[in-house]
Image 1 (cartoon, helix red, strand yellow):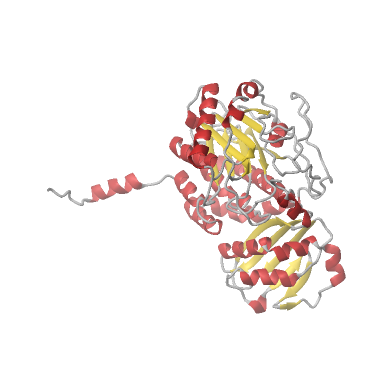
Image 2: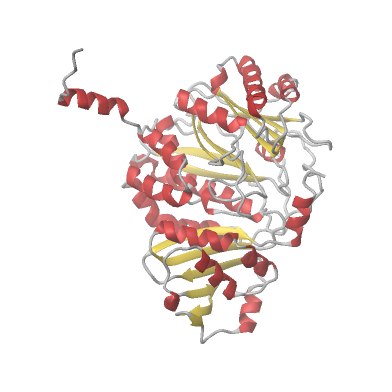
Length: 503
């Protein structure tokens, strides 16, 4: 047998064959734990990530304060071109969250059409099916749950986005009321039948159809409920239906969630719009949420995937309601290319500067609305950790604080129990300096340098804790790492909602 020489040329060819694109690296990074993915992405896409990181704190603060004057309750305004519809009623007819924000006015996004219908996954009268249709040449990108069980819709989207490299997507079909997770081959077959029916409807390939489901885990999707409704729903496609689309995908949500922004690319205006759903089973990597964001910008699939993966880190992966991740988490980002702006092929292109900023703002807006609608929530809480050994360490400490039942119930009781904060910091098992540890609630110091603060005032603390929006800052005194996370309180209502979820 003749052995091939191990020449530099052969080595180079092998290396080239095994090389991965930036988009593939982004997908791989997104599959890693959230405490690791940030550093991976920054190294892969620097200097873009470095520039974004420097501005992240400023943008996050701006986003978290933009709803300070939000009304106590709000109904989504029906678009003029769409028939008026009654608000979606959830199974338990839950009261609207006291942290509600109004649904924004979202104009048509060139190239995407939407329609909703009732497939019948719920016993009570409500729409539970959404179809979105895209033009030829649209780009797609996605970030999905890392949950070990996963779901048939997530498996389908991940596999076919990899296969098509995000090119040629034509439709998305979303149902609420059945997660189609932990359903084995029958669940996968149900997804395939749905995509086959949609592909025939829109004259495209099955792999050009994305799917998403939300609802009870372990229940097989009755795909006939969707396929029988497709002709009716498809005939109603319109470019002005965002509020109704947001309502159709709700489960235990108490208000529909949407966000909108305008940006410029090379002097040309482009639009970005998104909707999402989620209320419980919310935690980083990702939350129990579905999110669909569309822009009329012309951006290559590879660049879109990089942006999608990068911005998920400080938005959807920086929120938590109860610490439980879902099997079905899906964020899909689409670019129709119908704005008239020039096509951008690189995520770091200078012409995308304003677009990147606005896209991150839309994702942050949607993510924070999930926390505001946390099951039973009465407090919207921002936790900032500074002085950590690294960013990853700070994130882990912040997450431990945000997911501690004792911390969250203290917030529900309007108790500035900084001892519980300290407890959570210590059990994160990250480097800290106990003698430098400091805790602050809003502008009020609770502890400084490992002791109760000399300026501690119980009356001022109690008054501050009555606010609906709170901030906690913790410095652990060992380095320069920092991180932010958003959460809500844990109330009796959360137990009631989840105790009655299937009954």
